[in-house]
Length: 333
Image (cartoon, rainbow, N blue to C red; front, side, top):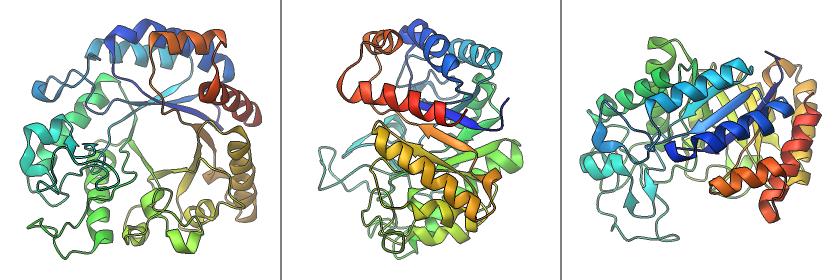
């Protein structure tokens, strides 16, 4: 497998879409040299350890098929399960917090709460029983996909150290975030011996970096956790708009991390980001720790969407994503 990472991300959890997804892998990703595929399942999987949490139709047999297809084509398949944050949308909890409401960091938030009043729920990082369930789910995904790496998500975590949480009230957000990262690292890396990936936005100081927004970087204090977590975690640093510079890449490299820039559909922004990241890696003599790029997709995948992508009959934002995938993979060959 090439040491240059050409990665693609998508959300997927549908047994019914297995055939078009496999065709997409064979006819779109393989010809472009994609060698890392991050499949964001979250709870859209038929969990056998906790069937009450299954919120999709993807089966263990489906995961095995995908793993075999990817392996035969030189693709490292990495399952993603959103940890800590993104436990639902708005006030509506996902299946984990529906069935285990005691894990909710903000149970007082109304179920019908909407953005901008509330973004999305987190589990409490200090609840003594949360990981007895979560680790079962992660283990099941690792085994189903025969994975040697796992992506824990952890982007856009805003519900943390809530004033009404009896365990987290008054605690330092960086310490709480680092605890969650370290608990996951202990299980995935130390116990299971696999690589751990995560999004990097909560580890970036919004003001110091100049991103100046709470999405791409932290405005609540979690960024200080960058000095409290292991350096063998692979950071996927996402930025989807064009900036004059992307200093977070250099920050992660200077702290000893491997960093993989993550783009979306804006081709100009993506190429600018990749070029700037390469330049910083060269200047810091750290090219081996900036090994490539991941193209993310955040739209709804359907039979039609896969077919349009395969046949290049897409339009609008999806057409831009298609063009970005072509451009970035060609730049990384």
